Image (cartoon, rainbow, N blue to C red; front, side):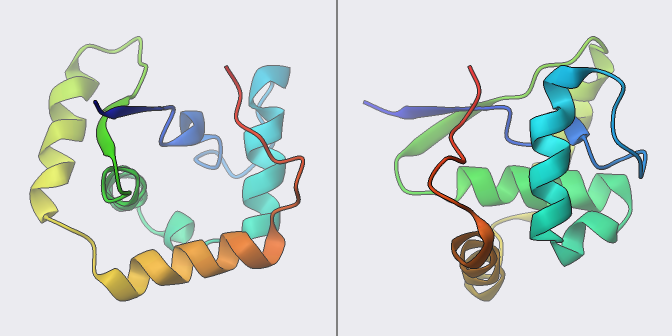
Length: 110
């Protein structure tokens, strides 16, 4: 049995630098503003690469669903995984930041 991670890049809500128009994305935007992950200020491709690789590094996760309206993004996202596994120190930094900021009501959207 495996785990499917849904929306591992949070609809790239951070990419424009301003709160998205769609209210659906506001939860992601608000949380990312509080988390202030350093890697989200990198180029979009690098940020997405780290988010995908972090997600797939989690125990039990066997696949990730990254929705898109652009069929070319599938191959682009797959190429981003070519950077290989994330450094365990970066994984721990991401987890530590989450633990220091997230509240109990930060549950996923379905």
